[in-house]
Amino acid sequence: MALRAPHPDEHGSHRYVPEGPPPARRVPFAGPRNFAAMRVMDQIRRDPLPVLAPLQATWGDRVGISALRYRIVLLYHPTDIEALLVGGTHSVMKAEGLRKGRWMMGGQLLVAEGEMHAAQRRVLAPAFAARRIEAYVDTVAEQSDQLVTAWGDGGAFEAERAMGNLDLAVAGRTMFGGRVEGAEAEEITDALEACVDAFPLAMSPLLGVVDRLGLPPKAKVQRSRRKLNRIVKRLIEDGRERLARGEDRGDVLSILVETYCAEGATPEDFDLLIDEARGLLLGGHETLARSLAWGLQLLAEHPDVLERIRDEVGAVCGDGPITAEHVGRLGEARLAFQETIRLYPAGGMHVRETQAHVRLDDGVVLEPGLQVAVPVWSVHRDPRWWPDPERFDPDRFRVPDPARPRWAYCPWGGGTRVCIGQSYATMFGTVLIATVARRWRLEVAPGSRPVAVARFTVRSRSGLPLIARSWH
Image (cartoon, rainbow, N blue to C red):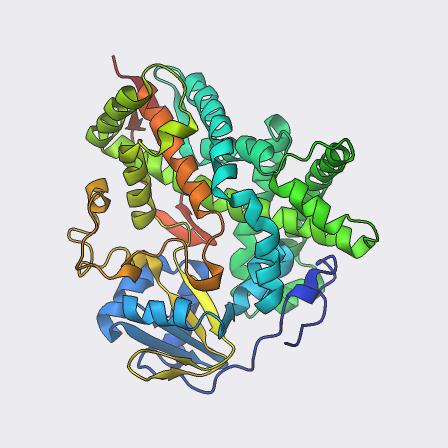
């Protein structure tokens, strides 16, 4: 597999990023063409959520978009999703936009392919094993309790910012073996925001011009990367010192340090370590924090569900702390998190690029060089699989619906690229929701009308302001 030429901002990690195949010559399905297609693709680049349902309504479960060199296919049906993500898992690669924006983000696990990707997952797998996730519960519970206690009765907070700070505080201990809080946490949050805000540029025809001339969007991302690198280097040095003292804590950073800083390691290996740690910080923080924030928003809108969770937490945990032995019995909180990521999946679309032929179940073949998107946002709201799909109803997941196709619910992706942190995220969401419910009921701040936008992840356009109120 050919690897593309290095980008000067990539710290040598270009060796993990393969070249894609030439653009496909055609798309096999009907859909927008020429100028209409260019308008649709511009909307997809800026925020795909408004156009996903209209495209399906007009063209059906398979939509082909073609203009100039761009060839995009959208697959809405669970059967096709399974054929792409599972059956075609070795014939697809990460999307062109993610590879182009690689220097903004970092993280070989995001874009490595083939054996390189499999090797990286094997390196990281121990940190996400069941026994390690159980060991993380105490930290998640402790940090969550500190945060929600500080709100106080009548305390107003912005959910996305609060959940971002919480996730960093927890990740600093569970993933990186140290502390990330206070001014440093704020600095990380601002730097990650800059990278995410610039991500649509990766799909823009102007990317090359901005990149070559160092125009403002690039300069801002470079400043943010330098901030992140400085903090990551501090965490890495702390990790190396712990390992030198024989204090391997089994966290992600300790595993990465052992892998990349072994005897005979080169400066490029150390750069790769920085790159991977930064990518994990972005990928894990950005997705989980948004999901947690939307969960609190939905519970503020549905106090009856929050009250049910509160009652269950009291029955399971009493007045004591939430521990690993409790998590499996906090079913109401877990169902609420599952329903949250149905309505607000962290990624509005899963996008792949075909690098070999992919055959769908009815024999239609997708040729190499197609950008193929699974519009998760629309699939999770399809009335064929989800009655009254816009309603927040955790009971949907209490008893599996035998009539619902398996791939009508796909927040974690699938195949070899299924999210490595899904069990960790589910545990975190369960514990956080249970912690909030036992202490507060939530209200939506007056005048707040959240609007979801997809920019790397599904986030709110103008924040999610909430108010904590005492149950009594």
